[in-house]
Image 1 (tube, rainbow, N blue to C red):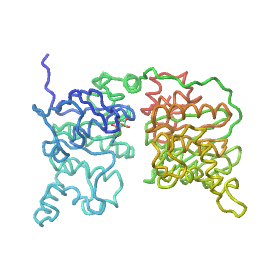
Image 2 (cartoon, rainbow, N blue to C red; image 1 turned 120 degrees about the horizontal axis):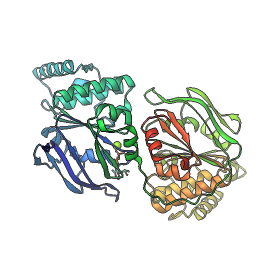
Image 3 (cartoon, rainbow, N blue to C red; image 1 turned 30 degrees about the vertical axis):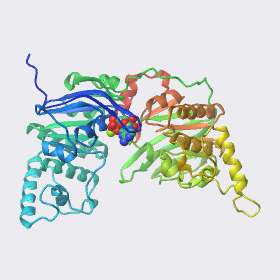
Image 4 (tube, rainbow, N blue to C red; image 1 turned 60 degrees about the vertical axis):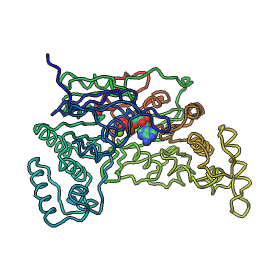
Length: 508
Ligand SMILES: Nc1ncnc2c1ncn2[C@@H]1O[C@H](COP(=O)(O)OP(=O)(O)O)[C@@H](O)[C@H]1O
Ligand SMILES: [Mg+2]
């Protein structure tokens, strides 16, 4: 049989970021003209990095790119677009105060000052394009007034207006409603019929099964395999996506959970765009139990945490802490009632980087009696003593309690947050992405500390995009997808395939 020649090949691509992260470790993909090529992989697999390299946004550490028969070296997205490769990002890059039309022709027709003729022609050309595809956007409305699904269409049209042959879509359905997904897929099929090549990035198994012709699965910067979609099953893809390496196990002995400490009942929470980010969740966390929530990021985890930590409105449903209804209570009240929160974004919510280590060590509890003198003023001597205790107990490497917290390494900053939150002596701890971006030694320390809290009969809610972490630490775990749990399982009673299916949106 004759070997087809790919229109695009990325060969042996390696990417090491400046901080030493090896995001891609020799990845080769081949894409054929006129196909919808799927790139599947869980969080952090390297999908976006690979596509940014293709689109000229990042320089590969090693490897080659061949396009339409010759090797290419794109120095910028403009370079890539000029050669016929366009990309629509997970986070849009439109100018908010400009109209759709302005955004689309910006940088293409002239240099900002458009003559009347240009605009008229551009509009006509665009209208034809939209009619052909049955893919309409209002051209004269400022982008900021348009819903996100329409903004994505504008990004796509912007690339098509530049006549790209290859269109890269990075997790395009993450921001779309089911109807918008269907409409997008219709357009992708039309583009394919016109001979365009689509690279479709996703972690959603049913979408990959529905829209792609072939799929390459990557995991931790390596290609696991490539299959024809018609010969694949969600089960096969799930196994390829999450197959686990042998990981160092954390010391964790069996521990019998006690009474229910925390409970959520039919919780609904809206996201920033007004969508239902959390859709009717119910679960409980017991004393002496780590309840983990896994799943690809952006499936409502952040909104869930914010709602139960008093940082976001609850639309519907109730939250209980030790039998008391705490729905809608403020963070400070929650802390006083026995909740602690290790937030996912430590530099925005967890710490004030310009402030000293000791000030950060009492953040959120400075009103407590133990830190005040008789005059309701903060007693800095007591605060410093407290900070020193935390530094000792948690083995935090800090140049001094009075130095700004930004002088600590990421791992030590995170340990300081954990130390502070735990020193509130909570009964219930929310640990959100507790080891993200943290060095190995601190990661091990923090993970073992969470297990220690559980052994001391605290209730721990762990939310992490790191599946290994959830598998290692949890007594029970749920997999979250589009605001719901696809299943609640025990880590040692579940197969990789089952987890992969749940992460990809197939309920168990
Ligand atoms: N700018 C960066 N600096 C350092 N590491 C990064 C950077 N961007 C991504 N990474 C890391 O590279 C890996 C791959 O990330 P990414 O390509 O975004 O994966 P995916 O899109 O599949 O979720 C991850 O470990 C991520 O943390
Ligand atoms: Mg990505």
